[in-house]
Image (cartoon, rainbow, N blue to C red; front, side, top):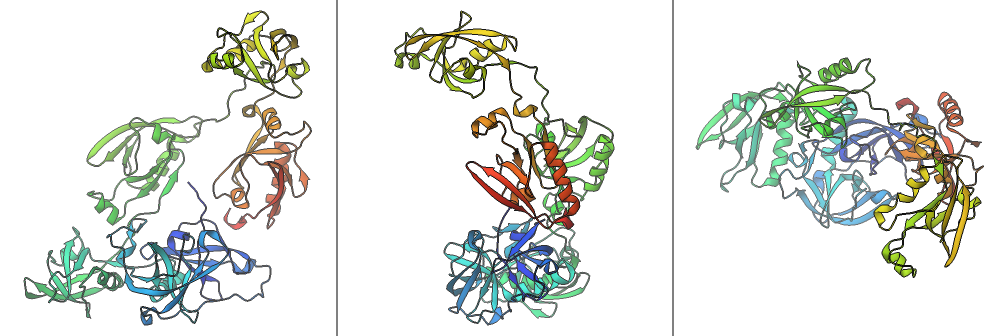
Length: 617
C-alpha cells in the first residue's frame, strides 16, 4: 500500500542536501520539499540508514524557477559540547503545518528507550547506535527530521521521537557523520562480529560483558564465550556500566572496516585474555521487499541476520512480507501468511526473489486467465502445499445486463409497524414511494413521493417485511421494456389508480465506459443516471466522474478525490472518456510542468494542479 506522509528536514549545504529521518523519507518514491517561504521543490532520495533513522535527500535545484535565488543553509554545532540545561529550539512542521519553532532546555545527554529493542525500523534496533539528546521543546508528529538548534541557531540534533513530554534528537555529530557517508556513497558500510554485549554487573569492574555470540560469526570463530569481559577493543578502552553506555561501544565496533583484523583484550574468569578476529561486512537486517501483483503478496530475500533469526540452515527461499486481503495468496487454502517461506513452485526450487519472478513470468506467459499453481512453503518447522491461482488479473468488467423495464422510483416496504402508524390494517401488503426520479415513466405517469402502492395490474405486492424490499422491483422486471401497467393504492388516504408506460432502464455505472489512468493513478467513468440524480446534475451537464484515486498517486497529491466530477483539463471541457483520453495524451506528450484540472465537488468547484515528475514516471 502506498501512503502519503509529512515530516521535517534541514538543508545543510548549498548543493541542496537535506537531512531528515529514515522513517519520514527512507522509503519514499516521490518527494516534495516546501521551503520556509512556500516554495516547493522536488527532491530525490540519496540514501537512508535504518540503524540511525537518518536519510539524505537532494533538492532538484535545477528545476527552480528562480535559479539565482539564495538557498538558506543551516550549520552544525558540536553535540559533544551540549550540556544539561542548555536552551534549545525544535524547528519543523508538526502535523504538516508550514513551519513552527518551540523552545525548551536540554534535559538528558544520553536518553535511550527504557524497553530494549522497542524502536525498530526495517528490522533494525535504532537504540543500538543512537543515544538521544532529551529535551522539552514541544514536538509532535511531523517534527520528525527537523533540527534541534542551540541559541546560535546551530544544529545540535535531528528530532526523531517523543517519549511522554520529552523529545529525543539524534546528536548532530552522529547525524553529520552519517549524512556525509550517505551523501558520498548512498549507503552506510558497517562491520559485524556477532558479539552481543551488555553492561558489567559488578560495579567495581570496568569493561563490557559478552552476553551471547551468534553461531558461525567472527566472534564464535575467535573463541569468545558468554561471560567474557572485554576492556579494550581495537586499541580503544571500553566501559559500559549502564545501558546508556552501550550505544557508544556499538558505534565503535560497527565502524571498523569489514575485513580488518581486530585485537580485543579482556578477562575470562579473572584471567587476562586476548582475542583476534576479522570483522565481517554487516548486511541489513531485512532485504528490501518487492511486490508480486499476480500473487497478491510482497516478498523479500533472506539476509544473514534474517535467516539466522528465522533459524534457517541457509538463506535459500523467499520470505513473504505481506499478503493482500482478497488476493490469490490470501484466497488459497491454506492461505499464505507473513513470515512464510516459499521454497518450491510447480516442482522447481526457489532460492531468491529473482528466481521466483522469472518462474512466475514463465508460468503466466501467453495466458489470459490465472494459472492454478502448486506451491510449497515453510511455516516455522512445518512444510505445506497449497494451490495459488497466479497470473493475469481477472477481467473486472461485469457482463452487460440485458435490457430491463424501468419505472424510476425508490421505495420502502410497508411493514406492520409502518402500516399501523399510517392507520392501515395490520394485514396490509405493499410499498411506499420514497422518491420519484426526474424524467422517468413514474414522473410522466403522475406518481408522487408518499404514494402507497398495493397492486400491480391487480396482483398484490406481497411485501410486509424489510427483507421484502426486492418484491416490487422483481414484479416490474417480469414485463417487457415497452409495457403499460396499472398501479393501485392510496394518496393521502384517497384511492389511487394510475396507468404508466415502462421504458428501458438507463445503463448502471458498471456498464458505462471506464478508464484507468496509469500515469496519474486514478480511475474515471462516464456519469450514470444515478450520479446525475444524486448530484442534481442536468442532462446536458458535461464531465466525467472520478471512480477511484490511488493513495499517494499524482492525482491524490493534487487533491483529487473519489466522487469528484472532472469538468475540464487545461480549460477544455470533457464530455466523455474518449475525449479525456485524447486530451491527456496531449499533456503526456508535451510533459508540461503542471496540468490544471477543473473539478466539481458537491456544490463547490475548484482548480487542481497536477505536477507529475516525468523523470520518475
